[in-house]
Image (cartoon, rainbow, N blue to C red):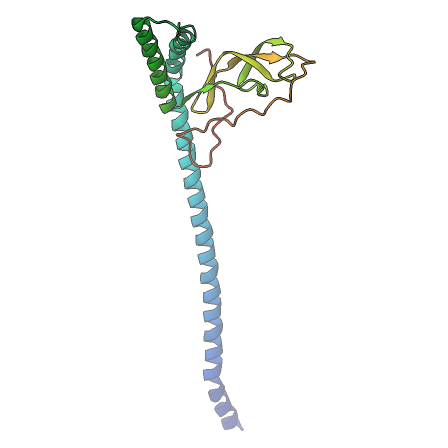
Length: 213
C-alpha cells in the first residue's frame, strides 16, 4: 500500500512542477507587461513635458526678441508716418522732372521702409472703410453719421496702427459711424497677422505691448 502511494506521488511530481513553472512564468509575464506599460506611460509623460518646456522656451525667446525691438520699432513709426504724409500730399500732376523724381524717391523710400517692417514682423493695422470696429486693434477718436457705413463700422482711418509679431504696438486711429447710420452692416475685421517666429500651434495675436515703454 505504501509503495503504491509512493509510486503515485512520484508520477505526479513532474506535472505539478510544470504547472508551478507555468504559473510562475504567467506571473512574470504579467509583471513584465505592467512594467512595460508603466515605462511607456513615463516615457510619454517625459516627452510631453519636454515638448512643453520647448514651447515655453520658444515663447519666452519670442517675447524677449519682440520686447527688445519694440522701442526701436515704435521710434521708426514717426518716420513712416511722415513719409506717408509726404507721398499723400505730393504734387503728382507736376510737370517738373526734378519734382517727379523726388516724389518717386520718397515713394520708393516708403515702400522699402514698409518692406523692412514686414520682414521683421511689424505690420500695418489699416482697416478698410466699412470694416467692423475692433477695440483690440482700433482706437475711435471721433464718431460721425454716415449713409455709407452702418453704426459701429470704420468710416475713415486717421492714422494707421501697427502690430509687432502679432502684438499691438499702436492702435489705428479711426472715425466710426455713429448710431443711426444707415449704411450696410460692417464687415468683420481681417484675421490677425500670424507671428512668423511663433512656436507651432501657438496663438499669435491679441496681446498688446506697453506702448508707453
